[in-house]
Length: 180
Length: 344
Image (tube, rainbow over all chains, first blue to last red; front, top):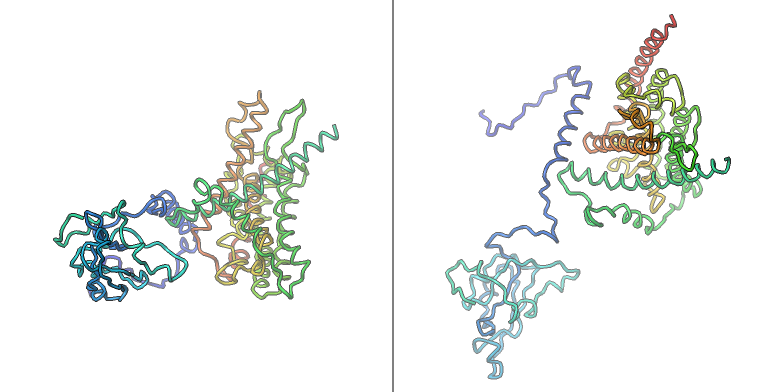
């Protein structure tokens, strides 16, 4: 049969020749191989100082966006929670009062919004389901924690701060609105 | 004059002690670094720049660990084991001539602690005591793996010491002296013994690997068979002493190999420095250490290249290969020396 790769080696158990029995040529050959590896460039990325370059469509930690005037986009419609295959998202909705008009864009908002980062599979379906362009996945990593409970992210960790907007332009490949 | 003599020796001893331990510590660092490089990794680089402080961190870790003694262990022997291992590794450095004499304070200071005329014999005597540390440690642990490791260590050392001694005899025949300084002086001017005795060097080097329990002869402590071998039950600084003594032994045996085969502190062009003995002395020490470091590098290089022997292969190699080669080599050398000296 024709072999699929050129790496096939036929194994044989023929008796060793005298040169092979000396072992020394083999040992020297092996040592040259290891010496070559000493001189090779290392491909290690020293993580905290250097980070691996992310693909432009990398799906990392979520962000809940605000609009230009700093109002939360999310209206707690629940479509993201429905779309979520891992059932990681849960929320409670509430009605906006007149006093809160500068905080929420529409009449309804999420009074509680939680993503369980241990359940989340970072598939991005929440982002796709969202009709209000409120939730996006970013190129940020979910940091490690010591307790499982700390992985349930509430609004305090998910909503972007007004004065520190999170860039999501890389994720806007779906033809949605490109402004904030 | 007598007091000066003692002061000289005392300073030298303290210096040697510190240097041996320091080099052993940095050998652990370099070993890990080299292992990393050979395996396309970076190696330790977190503690200080390039991980330079790693040995200190390791030492502190060793001291902080719980010092545990197994319930049925023989307490005194358990303590004695690592002590002997460390002692025998360190004391061999006393007979090594580290360089030519220094001229300081109007006196000539010898860079050799004990100028005994049977240096090489002393070295072999001490090295063979070294097995007691391992043997006692393994026996006192009251653990079958430790005992296996100890038995392997002792049988391995006995087997390889013969070939080692026989290959050293050829060197003694060539230089005509047991004094290490005389052996070094006889190799003056690139008359290194390696050019006359490559076979003896090969045998000696392989035996040195086995004597220091280094891979591929690390059967006494093979992690994956014996869970550490003779130091399975050891913890804290007692374990540290065992591991450390291995590195000190590696340093000292590299020094002895450099003396016997690579001309010790001799280097080409030595005669140009006869006007400035101090410069010559410093240079000779530097050259000697360079040779030692090169040999240590080869030790480590071999460790990260060659897999471990099986025990029967080890015994086969020791008794049926190395000893006959060493014997034939000795006979041929003796014959040639006799012809050269016109004894017939």
